[in-house]
Image (tube, rainbow, N blue to C red; front, side, top):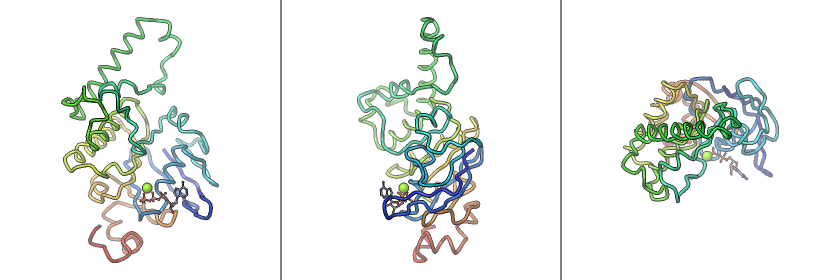
Length: 256
Ligand SMILES: Nc1ncnc2c1ncn2[C@@H]1O[C@H](COP(=O)(O)OP(=O)(O)OP(=O)(O)O)[C@@H](O)[C@H]1O
Ligand SMILES: [Mg+2]
């Protein structure tokens, strides 16, 4: 699905990503872990078209998409979330879901513009899907609440809901667990698993919560000092002394 080929990114004197190569296979939930400052978020930003790499290439389904802007990648089914809380706070949870563009579904824009019936049918379809998503996320009790009033965890669920409205192929999640309580985290994880299993979505997930990584991800890629160090199932990663040393500086192996 995604191939990162020999990618580097320099910010002034900092080499944030250093000749990194890795792949995310279609249909997987691939984890990306590593110490603070390893370059994970920078790599995500490059893959998602937030900025171009200093060198190297990004392939999406085998096509070179290096340097394409986010909205074009979105049109090709790649979505990055949890970068910022970009829910529209003055709209309700339900309205937030209905606002999501569905440009990559291949519908004929002209046909729907000129045929009022079709527009209304499409609106009804969008509303029905939004209601389904709300129910699936168990946000029914806050469906008419302004998004700005939702808890941090509920906002993240809503953000995942916006993903579900768009039919993406691959979704990049950066630290969805941060600041989310256990119950909501279980809901989030269940939704990710379900989207992966039932709708075939590929996920690429940065996470510091090792339990969540262990539950969701296979394989797990460890990044350190701007590049890929090892890759494998979480059980192997946890047992790898090199990883324990790089990630936890040796002293906190128990945290893994
Ligand atoms: N916009 C920027 N300008 C300058 N330096 C940056 C910028 N973004 C990241 N860096 C630097 O690049 C390096 C990698 O940062 P990055 O945020 O990608 O790490 P990370 O693996 O996501 O860390 P964390 O686990 O803390 O989120 C760090 O040294 C960081 O200070
Ligand atoms: Mg980061």
